[in-house]
Amino acid sequence: VTCGGKIWVSTDSQKAKSKYGSKNLEKYYRSRCPGKKILRIDAETVANPEHPAYQPSEKINELAALYDIVICSPSLATGVSVNLRGHFTAVFGIYQGAISDNEVRQSLARVREPVPRFVWCRQIAVGKVGNGESNYKAVANSKERDCRYNLQLLKDFDFDLDKAYNPVVLKYWAKYAARINSSIWDFRETVREGLVAEGHVLTDCGDDDRDTSGELKALRILSQVEEAVAVAVAIDIDREEFEKLEQQRSKTDTERHQEEKFRLREIYKVEVTPELRQLHQDKWHGKIHLEYLLTHNPDFVWMRDRKSIDSQIKSGDGQLCLQDVRQTTGKATIHKLLNTLQFTDPTDPTKEWSNKSPEVLEFAGKALKLAADIKILTGITVTQEKVAKNPIGVVGSFLGQLGFKFAGSQRRVGEERVRFYKADGAASANVFDRAGNKVKEPEGLRSQIFEAWQKRDELALFEFQQQGVTAVEADVTLDLKTPASKVRVKKDLYFGSVTASSIDIENIPSVT
Image (cartoon, rainbow, N blue to C red):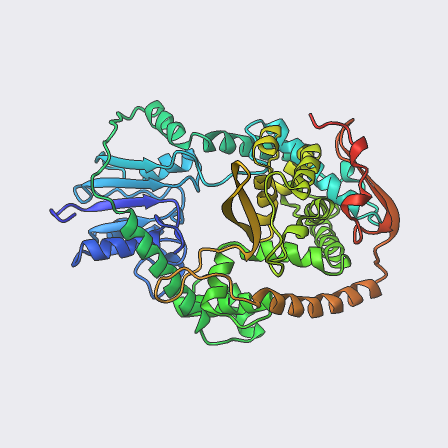
């Protein structure tokens, strides 16, 4: 570019927190190539009437001809071709695996002129579909069992799942998911094989001596903080204004920030700060919401899942699309059975654990016996090898789902050095202050949010129960597999007071 070349850069991400996202690449090129005209085409710019990339599909050739560097995310519709001749001197592709290998090849072919393509792909892709299996039968079976498990826990829920979904639809979704999953584990090689199959001649490039990783990381942090501040300082809007914005297909940056701020305020019920916005971008909501459901009225999770499934059945005219069902009951039940919360109290500085602690060994042993169901309901893989080599790591996997972590230290015990772990409170997330320094989750923020959520849910539960829908006392027997893995829960109200002692662990058949 500095020698006069013009390039098309294709990437599979856009967010500010992505090192190779379109936003950060734009900042990088502006700092490295001052004076060059740069166009960013992504989900935000194509919908922003104030941006040059607004609705580019019909005018892509005329638009691209005006710029030295065009950075494009997958937001540009499939089938859009750049037919310029003699303009672009090269196409660059940077792919983390957020899109499939087919989409990678399509994006590389966007510029039709046969100019050189320079491609970098991550070795292992970042995403998976379903349970991550590459066997479609395993994907479909896992999703069906997940739904059955959660519906069984809604004991007052009279619903015949076998008659309520189309197995053909599930089968073809599972086949698509399995194909994507199979490419994840060696994403780079899958893309390479696809390009060779299309007739391209590939040459392996050596590593560039210039290390841009640090510069890109700094730009990522800067973009992340700038965007978080912009959302936090946006003018507050009311619900009517929000709903109007939500219906708009075209939005300016100001309108987009206002809409996001309102949505965050509705989700968390607290003041929106730059830290809160960054936490949300780091998938914080799902983690603290799970802790909230484990520590508050168990009817809250029952109500949440019951409302969700009722809504899906209603919108589907009595049918369910299993791949769209998202229930929390089963996941919360697993954490209650294992008593994950016993490791989350940072108020006792003397409490610590090692790989030989009885609580840790008991936890890991129970997790191993329920490994197949844990994989389906939580996505956590528990193996004999993990339990034998690092049982504290098994505990850490479950703590991570609640947004907590261990702090480790070593000291000598007798003739050996032993690593001990203490509860370290909330896990450090990818959250930074305006100076770019990493900061921890603000102290007391969770309790403030939980208090607001409790008030909201108590009112919602009262209104829901007024409709004649209540949790029932029943013997809950979960037969998740045939014939293995039965979890027997004593007669109780929902799973509210289920503890590890309530589970007939010894009589659970071994997991195969």
